[in-house]
Image: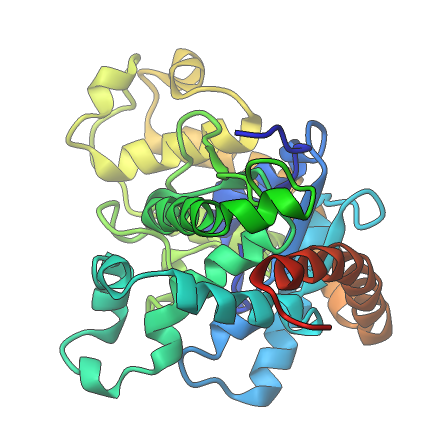
Length: 344
């Protein structure tokens, strides 16, 4: 397979109400990646409309995700930050991939089955073909690496299958247009150490989620210092002292979650945290966790609020990023059209 310049693509849905799980699970890693890669960070608003959306809320949430990117430390001058719908190449290439991808491949996608539920006949075609658009998001830039969570691994495998089939099906045309033996790379997943899986503060067996009816189940990035302190103090724990080693966290999901959050915020390990706090009760540990969380998250939340109030600035960042993304995507789509035999 031909060598391609290293490029990272990552997309985030504009669902609103970013919380600590989003921050530690994605945003912190995005900030770290920009030191090692050229990165494209996309607010995937075309994906959002695969289920019904309130237009005003979609606008608000698109700006909120962008503000979260910037407040967390993503540099929009070094990287490309934009919203998907401003670059028509995503939808264009998705149609090409609708014709390359196979029904059998899409039928194996577990996420559609989960999201559509029992009433699949009423699910949108967009929700079904979502993985083809995801493949187009990545490959319209010929990105080589994608950070993925557990729920997206299957979609990245499909992206690789689509890229491989395109390369094989059109091998002769690809070569005749000077692209060597392959036009699309087979993107690799970026796995950045053990995932920071942040669980609910009310139930350590469930992921932290914005859909949980209890606001005390999560730390929102918009929470102020008093709200952060109150939520961690009220976080569910058990009556035992903290163990001195991670093996002692087995069967104690709430303790494991809080220790994991502390470790992620401090940039250390659970073992290191337990060396400092093993044998202590939760009241002292929670006080230290509140202090750390306010120190780390307070500036992010404050900057998010400042940026969200400045629509002109946020929209300008997205327009500038879209112009730069469009330049790459248009060049690649021109090549795709030549390879396919379209007259232009």
